[in-house]
Length: 120
Image (cartoon, rainbow, N blue to C red; front, side):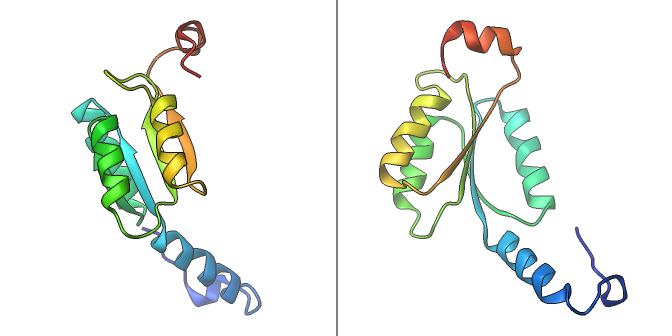
C-alpha cells in the first residue's frame, strides 16, 4: 500500500500525485492464467497494489468476463501459452470488442521457446 504524507510532497506536486493515485484505483485489470498458483500470486500482487481485477482461468472465461463486464477494462494481463487459446489469440479477440484495452503478455517459459512456438 502506498502512503503519502503531505510533508513529503511540495504543494505543487500534490494535485498531480493525487490524480495519478486516483487513476490507479480506478484501473481494472483482467488477469488470465491457467495455473492456479500463478493466477493467485498475480491476483495477490495486483490486489496489494490497489488495482481492481477480474480473474479468468482460460481464454473462454476471459472472453465471457470481458463481454459481461459493463465498465472499462484497462489492461489484459495474460499468460502467453495456455491450453485451447494462447494469449495472442485471446488478446486479438478481446481487442475486437475493446479496442482501447492495453495488453501485457507474460510467460514462465524461456524467450527462445516462445519465439520458436511463434505465439507472438
